Amino acid sequence: MLDIKLIRNQPEMVRERLARRGPGATHSLDELLLLDERRREILVQVEEKRSLRNTVSEEIGRAKKAGEDAEEKIRAMREVSSEIKGLEEQLRAVEEQLEQELLQVPNLPDPTAPEGGEDMSEVIASHGDPRTFDFEPRDHVDLGAGGDTIDLERAAKVSGARFVYLKDELVFLQFALVQFALRKLATKGFRPVVPPVLVRDEAMYGTGFFPTDMQQVYHIDSDDLNLVGTAEVPLAAMHMEEVLDESALPVRYVGYSSCFRREAGAAGKDTRGMLRVHQFDKVEMFSFCHPGRSQEEHDFMRSIEEEVFRELGIAYRVVNIAAGDLGAPAAKKYDLEAWIPTQERYREVTSCSNCTDYQARRLRARAKGEQGGPYLVHTLNGTVVAIGRTLIAIMENYQQEDGTVVVPEVLRPFMPEGMTVIGGRSKGE
Image (cartoon, rainbow, N blue to C red; front, side, top):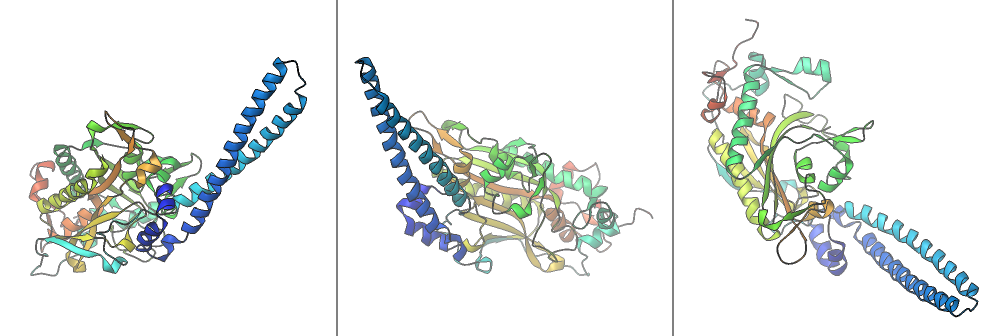
């Protein structure tokens, strides 16, 4: 969340920067400022009454010591104590309301995020030429059906729409991607983690997914737990309410997990195949870093995403996301989009966000050096490979006329020996 002191001391600056996200982003600022003023007024009254109570208590002590009647002062102290109790209840109520309002306010967009909404995001880099064919290419659904490696019908029978069974060689290809990504990130200073995928509400609020994205989350009422939509959540919450050693920064993790999203509001969008599904696997990187290094760390993490797709041999472009299209926690975000031949367009396959101190303030994740007090770290996250979407990109870009798919050379060391081509035939044949 944002620092209430920043909002109080520089309200117009905050309003101006939030307005870049769209008109709805500033609607609660006036209420926040009123609540903050009310909180400070009550706090002054509480402190004055406590001081009075201390004074009366001392007078009672002196009166008793002198053998004087202190009953009137005792009654006065009881009245003051009752007033303090009432004011403290008011203070708690105002502070709770203030915190709820603060949770609704998104992060301030970075000045280098383009103006406007989704259509105003800017392509800032690209690599490779879009794949062309001298035959009619098939999409990933047809390629998977031809090799019986993607089964949507049985998944729908078992789980409903937007689920998928992966089979045979495609399973090996998925875990080749995982191994490839984990090993690459380990060499770059990221510690491999398999995190829990069920988390408490505190982790969802701490990372900024609650309350704004509640409709996207599967909640388990009986256990009061949530299925995560990204490993970012448990990786970030791992250091909740901790003080890290400054000398250890940046603290970097790469997590592999299944992810779950309800895709509320996406009805009728990308319904064919496994581009937009409720359950998918992902390799995610996360970093806790010094505030002065987060821009550099952001560029470093983005470079890793680019390196992955260069080595996979898939054409891509990098998009600087416009302020109006940023998620609530992000101050700046890059998307990496891969070329999908049958759609004749680039589609998002990874993202990389700098959340500055927005998540750290919610999580109370701090660092401390040899001198000075603890300070909030900056947090960053980035997808190394979203497995489903990366499989789509590989299948469509590496397909051959007979319906087989060539395994990218960089993944072959992680495949069963000799498996350089997958799919292309019905398993019943």
